[in-house]
Image 1 (cartoon, rainbow, N blue to C red):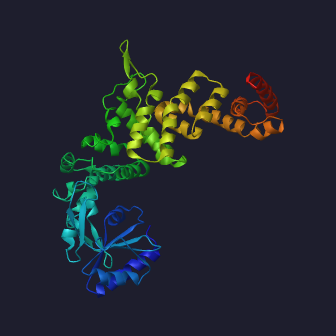
Image 2 (image 1 turned 90 degrees about the vertical axis):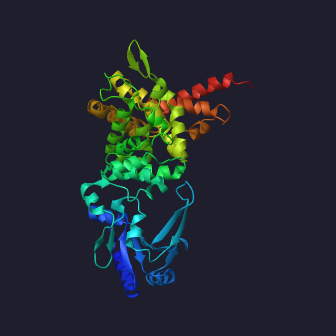
Image 3 (image 1 turned 135 degrees about the vertical axis):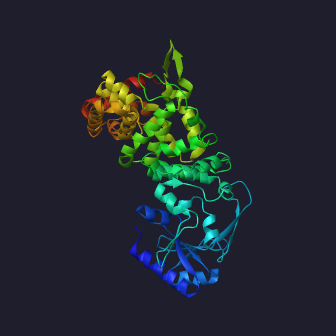
Length: 450
């Protein structure tokens, strides 16, 4: 919710602006979310009818001003969540998201100011002092009907990022998309957008939606998958064995897994990377899917998918830790379910969990993948994880123990430590493991040329 101290500052700025002949409005998502009864933090205010120098002095009377450039006419107050803007005119200069000439026009009027917004529900304005809602674009009925509709045919296509914003708003708020807006989006080229912008909109959808699949379903419907998400597009109509996947093709399955992963999103250490793992886990089926004796199989799709997963991720993010996490999770996502049904030993599970970037989150991904079948295996998997954690909490052989026993670190030392680690995973006590490791070291050293 808006902090009382911030609200007090905004109202004081609005009062001083009114005394100077201006008028202050809450705008954009702030108004939309307030009317929807959603939490509001970032406060966007637009002030009309005052020249920039005068407004700068008014804002400065309430704190330290942080200015975003004279042409943008945007002021922030340090230590607050308040952004104060002036009405602006924007002229397209190119195809990119930032290719605009922007100029301040304090006297443009509310209708023209609202017309530069993307969707009608984001074009609503609220008088700061009186609470009056100004709706020049039909945003109130669209908000009531939970519909996303573009403001104008002319300005909407000027910013291709709006296609992504449409998809993430639909996912976050559960709004439908007006048919004419879909038609317009199908004409918009997304190739000029930056990777950072794509990642930003997708991150909002993955982390703030109850059904993040809607983000990709909307993009699919408006032909927006091709340039940035071609691997996902290839999942559409890719068959699966109905005995294991009665839900349909790989696209349908992936979207279901993505939505089920939301149940674990608040419990994992890296929510964005985890949700991306749910999205990418079956990309390998693009390469692995074959019909054998009339039956669809995707043998080895976990390993075959690694290059596809990496290619997809490097297109949308530069975060190496995210990429490595998703590569690891997608490689092992099948194993927990397969191993529990095969009755694999605790030692085998220890090896799997040791190879996993995060064992708990691997289980969460596996359960998301399993769907309704996960109830029968969840308790067993978490029991195996508890046993693994107990094993890893015991004392174990370390490098310093080997040095104290007389070994000299050399080129064989890492091999000897790896052997000690295998004994640890097997549950061998430290005392016994030290004896076995030293015996192994003597054998290794005998093989080494002197």
